[in-house]
Length: 367
Image 1 (tube, rainbow, N blue to C red):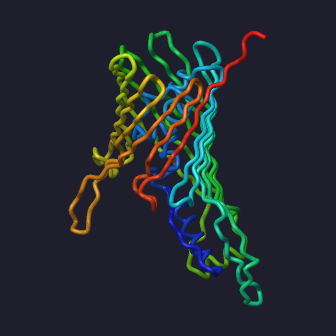
Image 2: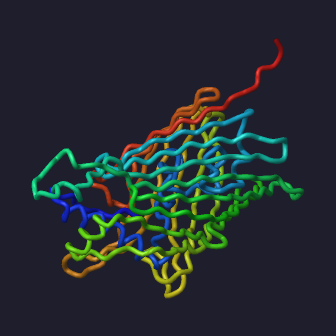
């Protein structure tokens, strides 16, 4: 979850800004908004298809989407990279993934994700002990969320059935003021039947616990109190489990055209959310995506997600959705993907440009 704040030119302004951000983190008892940076998605192919991807995924990004899909990795080692920027370039979002087949039946992978804002001015000490403004006393800090994910997947004796799991470590940090460590588990499965593929992913199956601890010096505490900011206390937040169900089907047109259609349904069980389908205990968020490929080289993608009811100024509710489009180019063992997308219309610019690169490495044979 991102919190907007304004940095002022005095110690009180920074205290209010930093205090507001820390208080939001402390107040995250509601599991709906825990570790929200892990809800963005990785890989321009997936984002271009509207995040309807747990059945379609068959590459290194499966460490994020569905651990069972990592068995689709070709070659001896596959590497995936992605960089994007949100909120007019204020926030940076990066992904690095590595996957390696162990044998014909199993594959292992590693995923790293970072979402952060850097170079935030800290003006708490802008005014020196004599009451003079000294701009040399301005420092900076970063607020960043990190995820380290280890993936293992294996084919089962049932034809077409694959299962996988993730162990993930979460590290979140707000400068020198506060940090949190967390741990969680994911499980996933894919099953092929003719041209159909059915999938299920249980995210945070045991709950992902983040333990927050804060270290504020006396100067910061004093400024917080002078500006009526609450002093944050050590706490624990929990990301509750969610279940994602998906299906995809492959169509062929002639010798060179292929169409992949996919649909996902993300289910949460922590009360009513602003989703297309919702009850007092269960909410479901549907996503749909398509990919048209030519000769296995050029791809065009589109997807719809983030269906929400929005109340306008006249108190009328309107159904909104987030359209995404994308392009892909694959030449031998290298794939370059592009997506035009956003994060639920929250950014200053309505859409964001996302690029990702994926390539396979092969062992040399012979001399």
